[in-house]
Length: 280
Image (tube, rainbow, N blue to C red; front, side, top):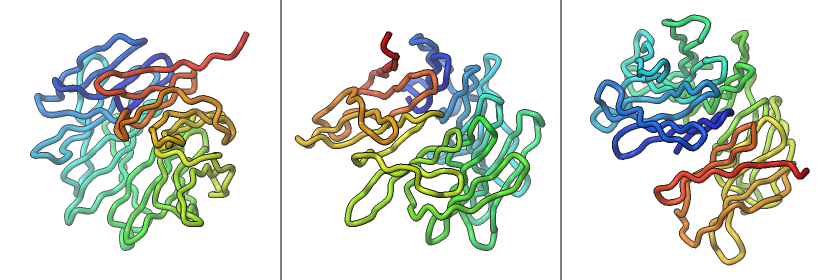
């Protein structure tokens, strides 16, 4: 299980291919064009995006909607593509592989079906450019790598702002919230930044793989005092709930979170969901 969206949607992969869940009911979507397929994201209409795998490497970017898989166009001068994130508008972002193992940010706009756009803030400087996520406002958090990783926010009008986040470990982007991990003072900490790259808050304990909703909630995994792995929920940086613990360091997968109060993870072979509710 790799993605979740408002309205009870989850997406992931199984032994037979791709799987989509809606309100707990699983649907086997199979494989795109008979190839190994992985789903990376889903939106609140149930549209899922991902990629096919050929000879162990990504091949085509695909979208599942209207009951079938469709290949997204590969941009000119590129050989392969991956669809990594989709918002509720239907805008899709990913990467496309070019000659010489370079990768560019790739955008498939819902308002311009059949077209594709590639973006690289500086082709002379960055060989690998990929989205972290696209948010509901159409902003894209971009990771651009050389010997180090730089981050940019690309706005719907095409303008970009470079952010000085000071880390290579950025995991999530939603509603202008940026979350990741940073090594400082001989330890890792979990940080949230705003769109200017300014630190908004630090979680009261280190959470790996943090994910955020559009409000003030964060989910991630952390180590308990006895060394167990725990799935926690923070509000405004303060741990409020521990949802599940495991003595196995690989006991469950990185979580996903939605704006309507669902947090989900995979515990062994089972997808487990938690629903946040306000007290009466």
